[in-house]
Length: 375
Image (cartoon, rainbow, N blue to C red; front, side):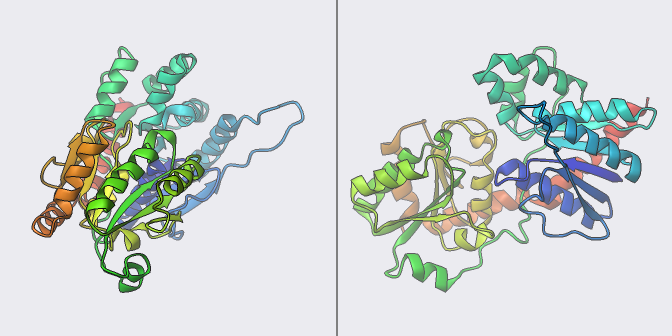
């Protein structure tokens, strides 16, 4: 197949999944065209089967805000016609599904079915601002195929958008041959030279990630056992989190390492991930940790209960209950339990969410959508 993929190029789960999906499809023999405003951060392979087409947004004095969605649609049309795309796969309803719809209508009679994958923010955006409801609903309904990354997100979408019922759940995935535990003595020594337990949090540091809860959980844990905390990522809550760490007197135990290219190299030296988010449509950071044999303590919200097996690959506790999360964190970190939790986390990632298990679901769905839309 000749497949166009559009995603946000910035650091985030949807861009990571879209990029990894395209690269895996190319290895399976498909030709993939990434159409985006910039080169996606995880896109490492351009060549015979992988191409990148940059959306160029020109500045016009007439427009206070440059219409990116129209520029994107224009580039989609160009690529679809020139490269004879069989299908266009867009990640996020706003604005990508709208741009995809416009491109599909413009290129007629060329056949260009559009698949939209919902990652979560598309739906929560409508929850925060109802003025986006009509356009989001239209973009989803006009798509030839719709997927969601979890059953939770599917149900949330059905609740928000009455009349939409044909949504296929295809979960996020990781390449478990690449995202795995490979111990680095140098990294371990840098943060835990005296053999401390290493806890980790990975996110874009938005308020929804509840960084104060991460720090409070760790604060309780380090009172009981020697431990350090790695804060991987960046975002608007970083300075507030650093201030809280300073106020608690644990600055020498908490390391803000910023964004890292190969997160698995850091996860591989960690013992436990903390993810006390307000909501998670799936929890890709948790899955990457589990693939690296790092169990997870998380909020019992959103799609996380579908990913983390409570009591096996980690623990789920009520949102905001830092005492309970600290208690189960200490239970996992006990020498008698940690190895078992490690093995269960890796098993879960490999058996249910590996690329070799999930990618064929996308291939089959693409074929189904193409055949159905031709009728």
